[in-house]
Length: 379
Ligand SMILES: [Zn+2]
Ligand SMILES: [Zn+2]
Image (cartoon, rainbow, N blue to C red):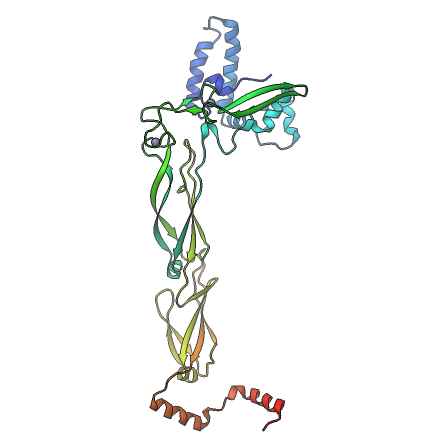
């Protein structure tokens, strides 16, 4: 036997709170209690119905199940359509009810009771420097978004007024149509034409947001960017997206980070690469070279005598911090031995002296010239 909508029975909206439901139940129970009612026969029927509705709507789990499936099964558990076994408790309900249940009565498709809807998530693109990625930074950002109207606090109602349940759909936002066919009863539902599917009517809309409950608002927040973030990292700021509709949760803001290119350092995971020019004497004789690091503290790299160009030295712990904690990467110093483009007279004299002393012998590459000799047979 199809039962009447429980919300309708108690005369409350789908968004009614526990205390709304309790209050409505008490009033109705006082009126229809068989001991006090005048027409005892019909009051008894009505009283049973009221009790049944209250039993379901006052129980959080039963109410949730009822909202989802339009009915409450005995022991079905309300855990969704786990297979045809779930039809068991409803076997006696007739085809129409099952059809309705299977398609969820068209409800909760992104909207909950009374048009409640979670706000949209938002994306914000933010560029930071490599230094900021290294040390972490708090950045203030501002953006325009659909926020809660401060005049009506999101209700959409003019101050001092309240939304009213829609009388056409009984607050469900849906109109049910039962069609009898040779196959059985088909129940179709469509959004209510009077309230547009919201289940409620705003009698006097808020003048600021025109009843929408939300409006374009400039928002300014501080985003904490932890040390170690990388290009493409995403930071979620819970609740900073668009405001929900009719009391729904706000969405989240996602800050997408891009790290700008650095003049000196290149990043590779946790490691940093740094090209460092050294003079020929530094490379040949060895020496200490002061190198910059992202921490701001310069480090000293010891270049051993006889260092070749393109040699890579690893300075441990001077790379990027791990965003999850747990240490730092390394700094990879790429040594570049620079040949002077111009020489002073004195430098030229010394270099010529150096050459005469046998310094123009390319010792490391002797094998190269050996191979040339072998290949061309020249002495
Ligand atoms: Zn408003
Ligand atoms: Zn309606």
